Amino acid sequence: MEANIPPIDKRSAKSFIRTNERIRAREVRVIDENGEQLGVMPPFEALKIARERSLDLVEISPNAVPPVCKIQDYGKFLYEKDKSDRAARKKQKVITIKEVKFSVTVDEHDYQTKKNQAVRFLNEGDKVKASLRFKGRQMAHRDLGYKIINRLITDIGEAGVVEFMPRMEGTTLHAILAPGKKAEVAAKKPTPAPAKSPETPAAAAEA
Image 1 (tube, helix red, strand yellow):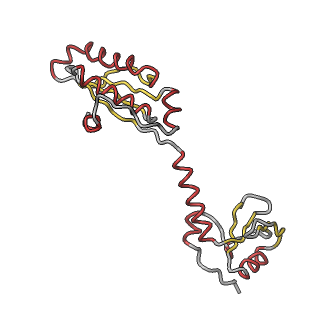
Image 2: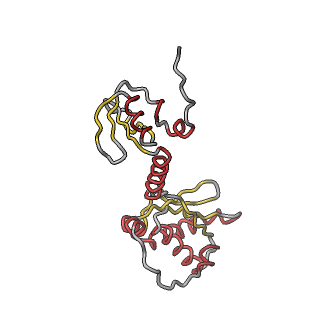
Image 3: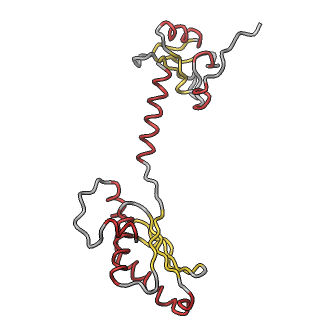
């Protein structure tokens, strides 16, 4: 008669971690809740020890020979694993592309505001898409657009490196800038309070 097997724990199925009666290996290497090695034994013996301690048997290294199992509280194990995974994800900087828009008729103050915004994005570790859209007859003066974008590339200096040189797509001229090496290092370190800038936070947000 086939033994009764409890239903798969949904948490276990989700994370592909075998626990308790779901462990299929003929023998497992067992570590107790204090990190002590209990040796190699059949899973049912290890599970018996876990039950006596009101704990679970969790397969933590299924590819080892024999697989390694640990006696521990499975709920606590999932909590700690989730906490560790979230901490690892936080350390991974997600690079996004922030767009800074210009126009052929941009005045000096607006240009400086948007240049500073681009530098700030690069210093934060993000890429910048500098775009300039030509309207109507402005297409006849594309050289002015190239002049503005090329000036931006020069003014940004070491804060960024050109990933894609200025090029036209339809009626829009754009270039992609990536953080320079100094900007990447700065993005990883906590930065001190910035000095007063000619732009206000509100102006930067609206730009």
